[in-house]
Amino acid sequence: MNLMISSPLTLLGFALVCYLLAALVALAFGATRSGTLLSGLLTLLAAAAALLAGTQILFSPLQPPSGVLTWLHFPVEFSALNALLLITLSLTALFCGLYALPALLGLPAKGRGRLGCLSNLFVAAMTATVVADNALSLLILIEILSLCAYFLIIQQADAKSIRAGLNQFLFSRVGTLLLVAAFAVLFHASGTMQFSELRAWHFSPVIQSVAFLLALGGFGILSGIIPLHGWVPQAHSSAPAHISALMSSAMMKVGIFGIIKIGLDLLGAPPLWWGLLVLLLAAITAFIGGLYALMEHDIKRLLAYHTLENIGIILLGIGGAMVGVALHAPLLTSLALIGGLFHLLNHSLFKGALFLGAGEIERQTGIKDLEKMGGLARLMPWTAISMLIALFAMAALPPLNGFASEWMIYQSLFSFSAGEAFIGRLFGPLLAVALAVTGALAVMCVAKVFGVTFLGTARTPAAANAGPAPWPMTLSVVLLAMLCLVCGIGAPWIIPVIANIAASLLNAPALAGAAHGVIFPGALATTWVSPPLIAVLLLSLPLLPIVLVSLYRGARQPRRVRGDAWACGYGHETAMVVTASGFAQPLKVMFAPLYRLRTLLAPQWLISRVHSGRLAAFCRPLALIELAILLVVVIA
Image (cartoon, rainbow, N blue to C red):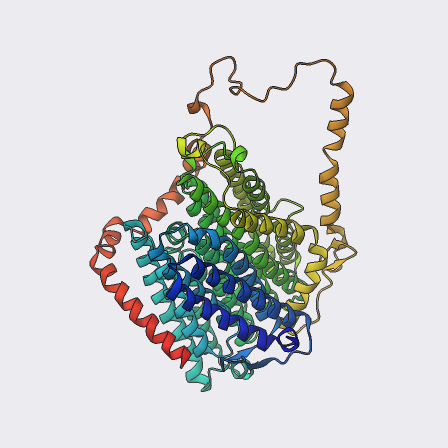
């Protein structure tokens, strides 16, 4: 036990073995209740071990930079960035595993084992990916997790899921080919695929740029950068809720991890145009993702588009750091990278809560369409409160975690604007405005999702007859929402940790990102913000109205808690309730040309040919054979 606590190598090896055992138990005994529970408990144990390993790597400076996992003989490298990704993935896996216990037991016995097996392989592959020490292992593991995602998407085996799975399969194949080409270029120039040796190699500018563009395309598909995002919305809508949460909070972060690794780690100092390209793609992804989310009525597709929005926000930080390195602006570099890395963690928390909450709603009502919901706050109060907190975090409202990380990204853009470079004075304000507009779209989406789903009256009998979900499901959502609050109020103490991660990646001194509970960007103390103080003020704001009401209330009729809502003297009708379509209609008219882009870029004749049926029938056995071969290769 002492060894397990003290050695991240042992803990991580133990976690991966538990994931593999959970997959085998689910495949062999998943049809039984006891087999499902045992597999689920092994999943929770594996996630906890991986979380502890990531924490030890992050907070123990004496850990070796590389090693071989106990029992598995799998070489890995350890860094602060690896630790952050491990913590992010493991937190998501832990709460998704808790949610999945009752979710799997509610499924037919036939498909339960297959789903449990694939989900554990999926998480194991992601966990191993972020600690791989060479490009070949990275490519094989990314291919395994992409194939597992494909089979998880087509679990329901209906026409919609099969189309979504085919989209993901085709996009991921293109992404894999781009990544293979990128690392082949680097291997041809250096003769090695070890990350430690690639860092020390001096590539020519042409080799660097070709490899970067290829890798940006491959990792961009995995992370869902627009316009490489075609697989994302339908995949999230078709997969089970805890798998959608894993895709959004974990799988797409592997793509972000790859962009950081290729743009800031392996190839040395990036030229300016790399960072500007990433910033441009980030702004487009954030804005278009938020805009398209407002038009969606399927709650999981809506959340998937908001994942794209947040991927764009994270990339604003990563791209800003690349620009800062190119311009030799340490303040810009540190602020941007801290904000991007912190938002990477924060997004996994609030988006995990939202997808799991959406899964609760779907399980209890049988519907995903916002137009058919309404009035669920009274029937599912804990889910409603937790999703409201997560929605506020997604909209970057203080004092929640989304606000803290976006504040750092805003400060980096202001620093970019205030620099001496003309390019910063030109693009810095535009990027800040784009981020502000994206935030406004997110606030509108909060009002739409919570108002239409949880408030008002039920629009269908399914919504009217809903009830609370099993307690493990609700607990997983509540705990994630509480972590959003903790990471927001505790941001002044978390940001210095993120600053150390950024400093280790940049080989530079850590930025003093917090002091005495106050966040401020270095010497610019005029822009300080204290999330704990904001929290105290927000909690105290209702006190004055409550005191005034209690003093001047006087004689009045008792509060009415039953009966129809007031409708200006008319009888209340269900049709009077605000709908999701009506809420978003003004923006639909205003941005009609942008909404038509989806039809222009994906013409119906092309879509119908791709989804003719023959290709999907061919891809499924091909994916199964490829997954089996890769698993044998990894085990061997």
